[in-house]
Length: 611
Image 1: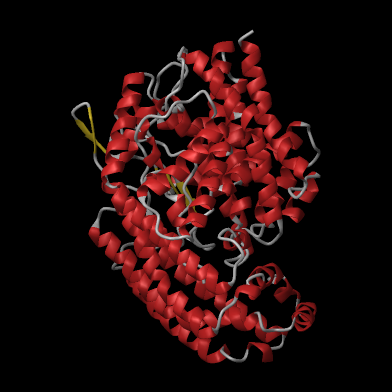
Image 2 (image 1 turned 135 degrees about the vertical axis):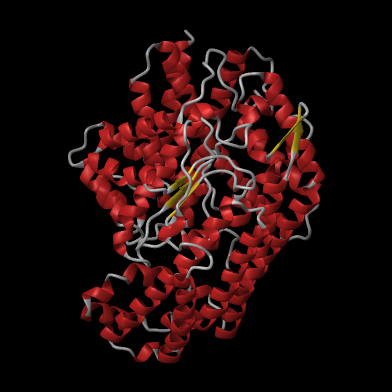
């Protein structure tokens, strides 16, 4: 079953200090969710809920205890019925979830989402047997069934990923119990979301939301940046017990489930769901940590000099450069910039991206109660993705648009695989998004009017890449330490603060000092709650795309066609198969250095500009 899961947030949220669309930005688009359902009272929604309840009951009646008796045609029919159930459940939960994320503080929307989750959990509990019984089929028999029916064999990658969980499978009754208990974890996630969305920050006599306050740390005026950082620290500290309780509870729940399943590490479940080997992730992590001195440490030392400071404070990390012009990028210009980059790569990419702007598939403005950050949600394969932004015209917001639109293009292309095979593991899900950013950046860099503008663009890109690679691996290390420590007992806020600071100094380097209060900044990161250990996927995607873009820049023949084939594959192929046509292999430790060398090369160029 694949109903609406935790939404992936982009690594760089788009923030601004206003709550509504400012006039200079033009008309910002809102979602039109009617392609899913017209309203929460739509008769089609009730029809689908009724169908789903009956379909789940009949599926269990027809197949429970009988999977190992099916021939190839019978097993294919069973898989297709399960896929249809996933599609209808996914449509319902996509509508309920997207509507909720538009206004997380609306009690009626939260109730509607919760009610839908509970109903679908109840409906689908009888289907838990499917993966359990599938794992009891002997491997040689399964291969015989694949050989007998090519349509069934197409689902072999799904079966392989399901069977990867076989060593950690519990009894049928226990699996049903855990399935039912999922709604409790969902409630803690909603508590986190609603708490974050409801926070208010007093800055210079003005009351701001979290989007607006975080954005102050990207302002040209250093006093504004400091005021924003201190306001964040003050409010996080006042709510730190709530955030610590959520983290403790979620980590403990995970520890219990992992222990019962016999999983060797807290990260194992994420690696399995990502269809990636632990040693590949460790090679990535080790390569990035080893590169801290030549990446983040070296860049921030440059930035310290540019800003004329003895030490950087945390509110200087994303500060504009002194020579950077402060301007808002209107929505129409952002659209034109990204679309020009996509079309220049291949008109087919532009054709796929265009409906997002024209048909209400993007919700762009900052609004009270709206979820922070940015994401692209694929919904289901017979509809289309939706993109959420918080766009207020910063240059980084343009890159966020390019990023999320890349996700959308990928999701549209992969939809042809069907519900089960279209879902790309997180490690590969960032490929098109980061590639879309790179295309947009290169287009902007080529259009730079002079050396000063080129410097600003290069520095911005380096900061984005450091935020995507260095910062996310530091996040990953924080999570590893947090979950390991939680296994030893309850963690106080001070315990979690200390873990946070232990990875920050290592990753950012000696250029920084840390204000009192920064130790609480772990509190607002949604990934830790919604998707434990998600964050390394960003670094994986950035490293992969840097290597991939190098192949493209070298003029590899047929690159565009190979690239589209890779995106169309969705989750039907392992990362080794997907990268092989480009001559790349993520299991080779040298692969990661190839990507990191691109970041280092940009810093080399920035250093050369100082000479």
